[in-house]
Image (cartoon, rainbow, N blue to C red; front, side, top):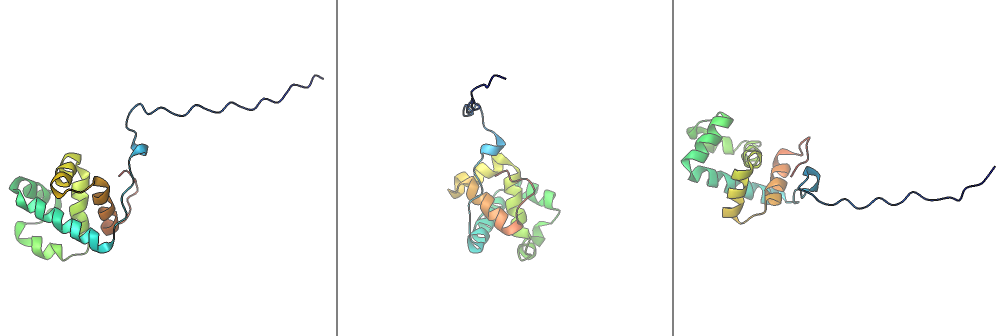
Length: 122
């Protein structure tokens, strides 16, 4: 029997980034509960400043304009505001531009108020 020399498996080449992969996205920023509430209130004010954005939000949530103040007192409502922003990239980026905030910060605030999602994407 001829003994062959041991040759370790070659190291794989590092993957080249051809495009943006969902796995390469930044993780949500860590924010405090107070920061999350503040960001959600800013987002609600931003939505309310534009009638078209507000109408879309209200139609998706199923509440009326007269119910916004009382709904804002509910624990999950502010999380739903940030969920709404994070669901549409164009809306999220428009808000981030005006609020001078990074999308990761909004995602972190959303996670703080709504809890982690099954799919960690932002």
